[in-house]
Length: 219
Ligand code: C5P
Image (tube, rainbow, N blue to C red; front, side):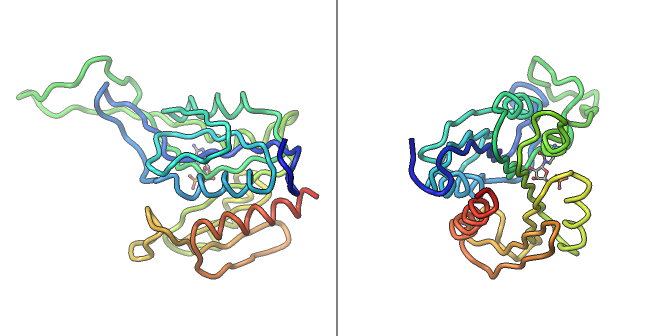
């Protein structure tokens, strides 16, 4: 058992991209290193929480003291997140692919003179929305992320309500910010009492500050 303000709390963190197969060697995915998710998991265990870290194929190092649950696809991530319940809080940092290929091929698609492959898509489950709107096992605190390229606060405020989460952590990932794959992040935390804009800091500092805010909210 760990000591700290989050001792005895069980927290789910989703992280990384999901990979949605096209065939055994190809996939579609969002850009995501998993760095912010790993930093958040480390900050939470640092304050004493038990963390279940459900992660797609990330390039960032795995968190040190969390229970790691590796997954590939959005559907696997949803199942793993549901398996982790009940939790006291859930933080959704994963960059989940919005669509999957409807009938992924069991064999590698071959180049052909007859033309290009046509991919049919279907929608993936929204894991955050699903968990945030559970009637029985909804975690006490649900936090979503919003990577936006413009009108960050407006879009994130709408997203918080649409998703049913308590807080949304919004960041500007437009070209030139260097957030994607970089060390720094500039975030705005939105909850039902308003908008809290933090100065630019490292992802590790964002994680520590967020973990402290979570500890305060849960105390
Ligand atoms: O809708 P959008 O992808 O911008 O929402 C971002 C938030 O929703 C993030 O917290 C992300 O982890 C979560 N999400 C999810 N499942 C999806 C899509 C997004 O959990 N299929």
